[in-house]
Length: 155
Image 1: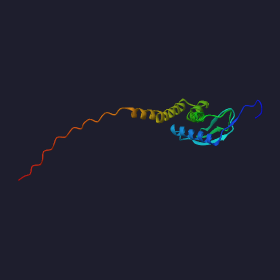
Image 2: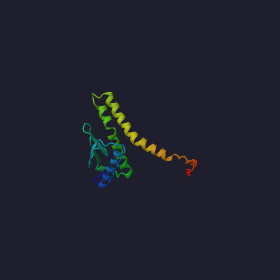
Image 3: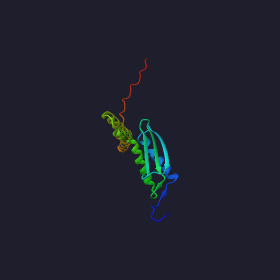
């Protein structure tokens, strides 16, 4: 490496694989199944990852940086994947906010789509943990049914 130039770390296929797996995990978690996803491992300018979205067709290309200024930890690679998945999560709101002719109902509709995803993921997970932690009431002794009188035989 030349004097004065910053050290460059090249991410490998295993880091890219971890990034993709974590990104897909969050996509699944948040129910972002309405997007067609493509992944790239390539040089990026001044960022560690990016998501480029085609809003009309809900197509996204997710890129992971080939070159880093340092060797990232596993946690950092996973955090970057989380961040980019969240970018996808809010992608339509970002798009609508940038549009010149966006209407308030469009923004409200997408806001509620995000909230519904949160209900189906974050809230559901919270509720399951809450219910699992509740003490179940002890079963009460079942009342004993009175004995039925025997049938009398006619003689």
